[in-house]
Image: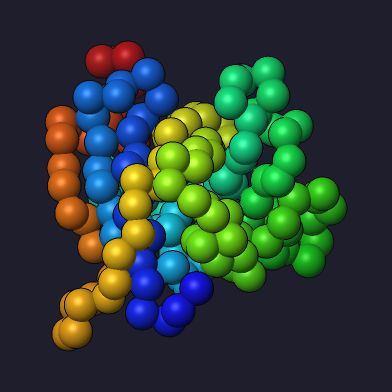
Length: 148
């Protein structure tokens, strides 16, 4: 894919389809870059491990291939997953309507549905990634214990 292309993804917290962020990112950006963009778009802190998974249900989430994990980029961790730092968005999301689940924070288990909605071309003097559309309030990353 050309250096000037972009991918546009819609990201929704699992079970909250009416809450979403549309993000445009360079096609040659890494999945790590996409994870940073997702976390920022939902006003979370990037302070936990994460991965992108092909599994469509909780039962198959971590078993389905391919899967991409931050753990694959850490020398001390054994995993059969592929790298998030060396895998491009275009590789992981090859065609429109391709979906993956973004799992952020394996303890709190934030699950987000990520769907490729289209591709585009980079605009001159524009920084990517960028949020194109926002619908609904972001969930609280660390809700007050008394409110839970």
